[in-house]
Image (cartoon, rainbow, N blue to C red):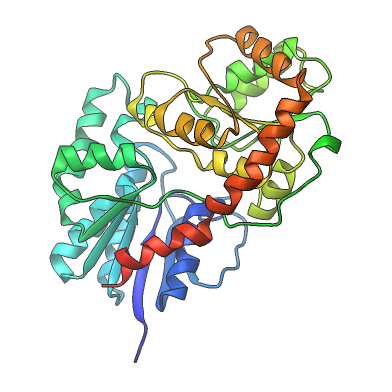
Length: 362
């Protein structure tokens, strides 16, 4: 019996999307013939995966024309290729998948990685936001099944659209737990996108008041140049390292060197308020105590497992006071590290992927 074919689509260049890689690998276990599609950028690295990949070169790299170009390329790719199921990841690929479902009458599954219409980038941009809301309202009910990264976002969509969105958390694949915490270097880490309201400026400013430690910022994004300028202006170039995007395994090994990990989303955005970033689970697997925003989903994980501190700060000096106090209590940090070991046995992809079967066995 031939395998069912599934086309999985994202708007990135495939190289650093760990959630998508895990889902695609799990779909192979479920018996699917998987093709992952995305964009091709000038500096996109070569990738080798156990599933097929297809990357499109686009005329535009951002803005409305990028999204139009991406969805046009995806639509025609769907039309001229055979498949049994489409998996659209995030709202920026849903229009092409939704239109194709109407025409070809195939199964459509939707994975919402965030509350897309509530991202800070759309704040006070009512025209753009309304366009995305219209796309969402038009196509989200076309999906045969849908899921997202946490219960708060699922509840939001279920209430708004009367659907039954399920939850597949963004958990990492388990790996040998590092029991070397007391001998680690004096390093703090932030991993993730360098975008608005991630609290990265506050982390950089805090380093003025934290002695003997370095801050690693692992990721890329719209604010990268601005953050590097801030680091230079504060004369912190020798204590703050920007790594850019890293390979999955390289990032994992780097995270295991840190004493503390940050996830300090800021602002009033519902997307951040309801977020449950994958970086928190990466920190847990690496045995890194977590300092996160006191938002519902994040604080629930950190408090339930006693992994670190949910906090509310608005300045670098406030953050530094909290960090310096925490660093002065190595026994407490070691307790957080040991609790990460307990949490890691539960909060991993091997457990979470079992939930995919109910969604994709159709």
